[in-house]
Image: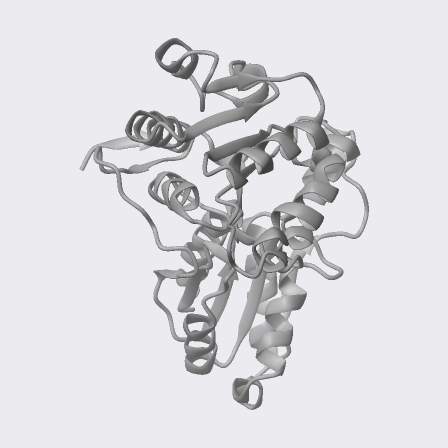
Length: 326
């Protein structure tokens, strides 16, 4: 199978779905600009024109509202938020409208909308340009939330999100854009709500999402040299969550580390911990659950401080060693 980058996988998915379905269009600021969205949308404006690749002014609330209206009118919009931080401006539209219309209309209408949020972090971008807000959207009923960690899933989950009749928040991380992996040329989907074991193990389970999956795999390779067998679980989908896969893995190992690139308090790690605590698996734990996540402070604007702030493989290694000491 040929290998392409994560960013090329997204671009290929967009070309294929827009070509096949005239109801699909992209709307958002900078959708024709590499400065905003990397090279994920290269060639789209030339191929499909301004009626389907709509570059907008900076107006997150308005643009998201327009996309919701189009979805209610049986279009399948993809609304792009090139910096996830500013999705706060669109939170009214996302939480009070996109997420609720299907229920408020008694199931007679659906909102087949893909809300594409891009996480930017590092490079001294500081507090207002580095936020990972997946926990906020996972909290909202009526939304599905997915976070691919590799090129194969980046394409497959994007296609699945666009085909879904529900609003899906598709979150990607620019730290993944240069990752290369096997990706089929044909169009395909990765099922929403299904996680996958990236590396089988028996000593401890590391549950990870997005770029932290790759850090977890690096950590498992380091720990393997110490004779430790780490199981790495890639959630892929935060909502719905693959609870059976999670519970089966933790039951097998009796230990759990959660690696998330968001803040710790009320984050994805807290939700996963609660699911374990509420299940019969809790009594199988041999040690307390450990969350590897961001400190509860805004991102710094210093490269030196960023090295201490962002979680990497060595943080997962330390967490596993601590867990195994108990």
